Length: 209
Image (tube, rainbow, N blue to C red; front, side, top):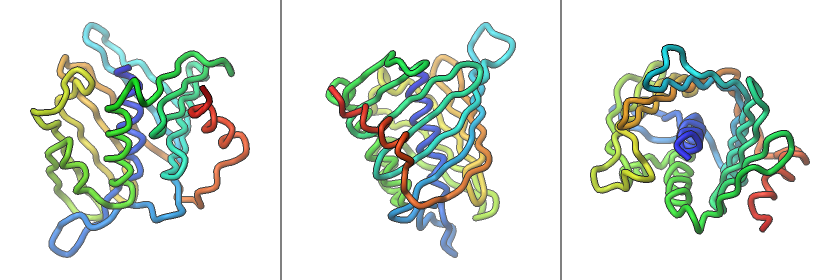
């Protein structure tokens, strides 16, 4: 579950690159209504007791209308679909995990928070995090710290560091136990929000009982 939380946080933040006003405040996100984001990722998981990180490579689609489609391609093919209805994971075309939103209310809350950030409403992040920003539109960083009144059991995170320029380039998620995930994004493109027939079918599995 911690790994899936990292995926959700990193992928949603990937589309939340802020636009900056003259006074240095965030005014908008990178996506406009009717748009989605496609890209590639390299996820490096560092665990206590291991010298080398565990690496995963793949691609993703983030559609505010449909949800997140996260395709791990190396070293194993695993597809994860997440939206406000819940989460489904497939390995080699077979369902290996299904978590309805009713069983994970925090998932729906997080998705709603970051859906706002996708469209530029960074104020919603203040419901779950303190937000510290620095830099400018070409080189910026955001530091997110979970509020102390949050649920540490479902969000055992000490901090999230986000950096980028036109797009988010890196997201680092540090857990309270010292483990961390670093996700580096590349080949990111804003596209019309029109998932392929295959992607529509995958998203539909989240609603299938």
